[in-house]
Length: 310
View 1 (cartoon, rainbow, N blue to C red):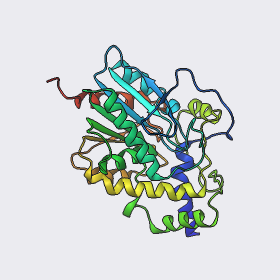
View 2: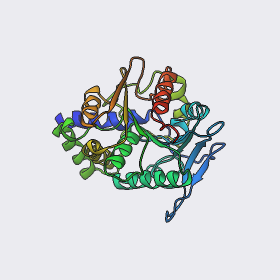
View 3: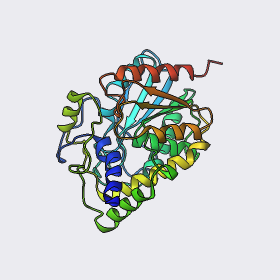
View 4: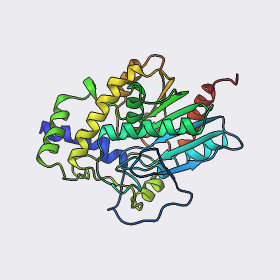
């Protein structure tokens, strides 16, 4: 019974984080999609770009969550931040979105290495512009691990939206045991959460319905993904105290996916980190019904941390 409860906790992080999703199938790339070609990379990464208007004051790198992709995660926030002068880039992380290895867990090191490579690429192609990294859920864990391990170029700021950091001492041993057993005994088995957990990732039902029709979106994690995400969360939590950039952590009061205690514990581990509690926020903070409040909060925070011109 304890193992089942432990598995349910990890299902919360993965299946609920992704929200509903259909079986995989072919689909055309969305209008305006671009690719990021990195030096030495095996293949380009599918990406989205919202150009700053009229001229960029800074560059933003967005990292989506588990089962998600760049186009859907930042569809509403990207244009808003672009209008405020931020050149916004987001890519489909390996194993997700329009990548050919869709639905195959790439490993925590691959996710962190990709984030570091893209961040360095953006810093190189946008010389002189401040760089921000914004990560949602799993993407927040990737961002914190990459920054804390010294893998990123100098940042003007890092924003973690309901980040996946329920690791270290904040994750009970029985949950780890359940994930390890599932990954060992049935690594390829996929879980829907049906009969285990019932939660809502957002109050935006129309958006959730769109995700359910998106063939690039999925919410059926394999057992190996559970253990992989725990390893990523452990790395993020361990690396967090070494993050030297300004950090903003945002959590929604109605979040049924990640509890608040790990969010506050994370904020306490990062020197000078700011913690914002959104009274009307859910887990999908950038896409909830009141997402505009989060868009504005993050935008104003970034504006405050753009260095004054010399």
